[in-house]
Image 1 (cartoon, helix red, strand yellow):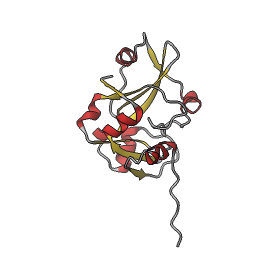
Image 2 (cartoon, rainbow, N blue to C red; image 1 turned 30 degrees about the vertical axis):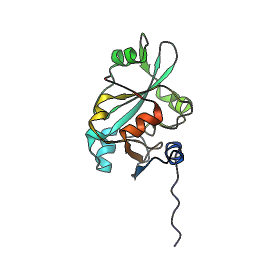
Image 3 (cartoon, rainbow, N blue to C red; image 1 turned 120 degrees about the vertical axis):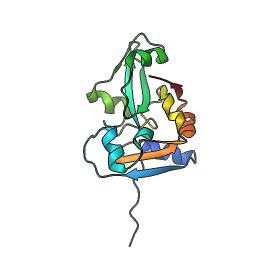
Image 4 (cartoon, one colour; image 1 turned 180 degrees about the horizontal axis):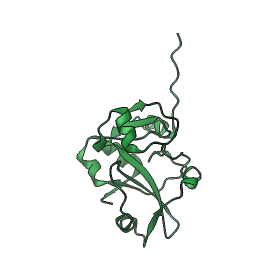
Length: 158
């Protein structure tokens, strides 16, 4: 019987090109569920599960913030880290146009453009973290240091 070919996302293709190891976790899900439920569904540690949020600064520049699924982004702290007077979440209707991904499948890797990435300092507590793989139903586990290197992420508390 022929082996079913794995469908690669932009995030996976980028990691493959750079020969960076990662683990793919697939789960059944047809629509958006939050990161806490995704962690429960995939049976990965919640504290190592991170969500990707895209914010826009007053300057109209986009920023990517990767933070624990159980945390809420602190907009004032996020703005300070980004060097902006203020930042706001982008509207859900704009996610695909800005990132190339859908809500619930937004990976910090492989967006349409390379936006500045900020990784929450709690990620440094772990060797590996779990992030969206670039589509609903796909989670990637990869080294924190590889994620920092691939995204040129700045570390902070937000």
